[in-house]
Image (cartoon, rainbow, N blue to C red; front, side, top):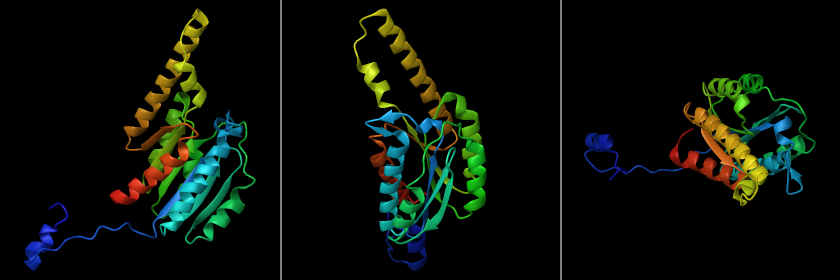
Length: 229
């Protein structure tokens, strides 16, 4: 019954059922942190390498769906690729990103958001991939508020897998207990930062590098399915 357009029914005096189809020709912008937060190593690859691989996975899917995909990297190396449609766009993304590298510098989220807002005027799903820390939250909140004036924002926050592994170990000694307490405190601060983002209507993904590709794909598909753009 929820699919029945009751207003149209009252006007036309017959049942009219809406056809729900994913809209095409929408836009996705992958906003990638190339600062120091992306230099952590995991599984022989830097977090940045994992992020770039995941970004290309969701970009490929979005292009197959008929959407335009763009790339904006900032923090260390900077790069802008305006959204394009068609499967040929994946080659443009590959060529534009193959030499990107993270640098040991702090990412200025607000400056990055300001630049992206100037470059991308059409409403888009902006997927920012970074590693959210408590000390960054004020700058990050200002950045997402600016982006939200026009765009739908999702922040994917990478969590180091070794932290999960450390918390899963049995605590047998005092140093173990101290380390576990420090990790738990860090993760709580991280969780608080995520909640601050969610309170401003930001979609937040708290994931490890291994979980990132599937999480980005699932969120992209959910946005399309729910008609949020």
